[in-house]
Length: 323
Ligand SMILES: [Mn+2]
Image (cartoon, rainbow, N blue to C red):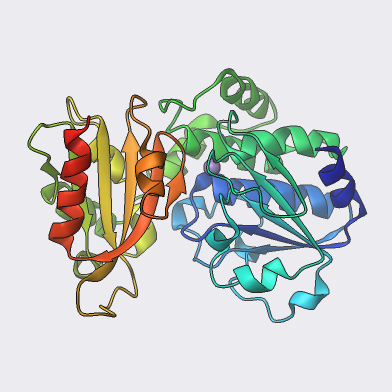
């Protein structure tokens, strides 16, 4: 923590990066640290490869997040936020890995420990929780902008204080953020209540795709590129859909099998899919994901695979049989 703090204090031109297909924590963390570093008079560029979902556009600085970097040499420091490994950054990972100082701030159990200095706290409910403490130690006074970003990170990563990572700090920090001017109703309305018609239609198709393993302990939901096309939605519109599959009675693990945007078959043996797993807390899905080269938390993990849908499903049913 101390060395990382020192590096941040000495930095001048900082590249802030979070993972592709960003969620509320990835975006909230990016914004919170971005605002803080700018207040310290540093040059901070916020980078995310994927467009920011519309529901998060109420946060400050989101309109300044860039998807392309022309000149990586301008940066003396990179801060990688909410990424279990450097590859989660996306296509820029290789360029980022060459920067003089790489700082890794994250809460995934599967974090590979990349970078020159790191704060990896798997007991933190969100990367935003770690940033709350870090920003204070940077000597930046919390304001309503930083508070909105941190609150959003914690709210979304804990599934509105419902997931197993919900800890005392989640409530304590959010209480402070509300004291700084965050309006919980307004944030919830932005994050959960502003769906396009397309997203609701996508939800309909996704719900219709749900299947249960024969023993009823695992549910599978499928999202294809055709479904996105039919409803005029984008991959980021699938955010949170898995929770419907998880909320089914007796289900311990839910799997969202999502066809990749560039999922065209390479070998003729299948398409590329990303499988997201959510457990009710009684099953460690990170271990299952790791067997396929993926990673994540005990209760939220994922992996990528190129295969036929039927094969992916039979692997999942095999997992179900062990539950
Ligand atoms: Mn997170």
